[in-house]
Length: 485
Image 1: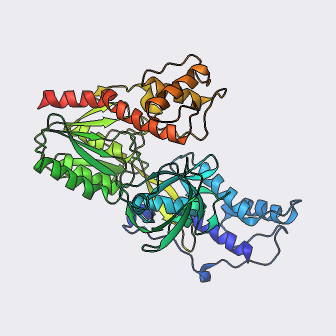
Image 2: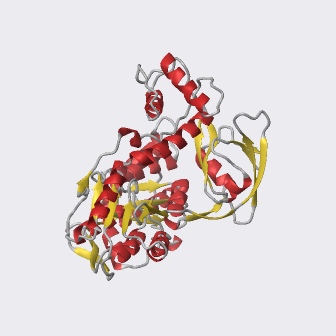
Image 3: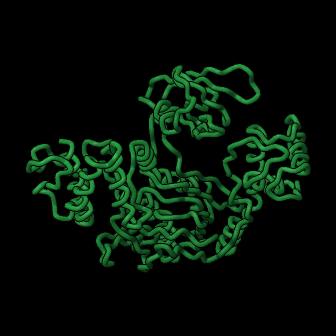
């Protein structure tokens, strides 16, 4: 019976791979492919490893089944069938040489759906593993975790009384999340306190913010989109309307730097607001034939627009940037973009907690440029100071005199923003120790010369504030708008 199920899985996968384009483009409903029990092929006698194959199996699977059955029955150690199947699936996907197509386990699939929907039920904290401990990186502003008093750097020792020692990040996240309006009890170790802290937090539906806005000098609006989810278009529309109606902006900076993309529809909805009447993007198949197009019917904005991009602006963010550039509605300022011009579908397999993300099409800009693996060239090329590339670096250990490594080098470069110079790059020497002490002393911390979480958080906050005045890309975007008004 096990072999029958394995054959069915392989048949399902073979069918899916041979019909991806048809499935995606002939149906508006992306229902998962399913096989009922009555459709299972009947095995025609024999036992695994005896050289007989299922007569209903496609000829292409004959060799695979021979290898599988031989390993199952004759390999010198017992081979778990799920190990062989996982290897077969990964090998099949890797043979496509497409980094955008990959298998999704349960946690990966759940996290991807959260990213797409832009919401989840939980307490609203970002966590990571820091020095082998589940650690709060940042509470989401206004979320239940922040309101309860959780802070960056808090180590989560237990969830509902169960120790987090040795628990994977994915398992920890699963335990913290849960149904809306239910409580979760966290035991916390906070730096500087000898006693543990206890928090009971009521889970809420958390909506992730992808759009933020403000008004800059000269009545210029600024909107940053960090990624595209199901709420991005709606939030962008309302924040832009507020800037236009309440602040009477005379120009707009759209910041897409570091935006990896996301939901295509979210990008299209933004395009329908900013791109003048005409195409936003064309979706094409492997032969280059247009299978779908997206259009805007918006009027030209009466103010100039500059779009900030960098090497990490990809996918859906490139659709918007490319449409605005091709239509002449905006100029691109910054660095060449990533160059991902493919579209993926997400398939959750029937009866399984796993899925697959796979490429179904490519897209072209309104002028039918193919930017895949090429990217978009900015109209106004501007490079940022190197420190912008690593000021968010996640330090995973305390740094002290005598240590060396890339993390020490990055610490030294962050300190240089405030004029603290080092002599031995990448080595925590006496000069670096003195610099850390000086920074700690200047900011009311104990000057012990050891770079721990408390010093790290304060340094990063001050570096981010300092860098806002060194953002040469934003400065050039503002200069362009002021001249174009």
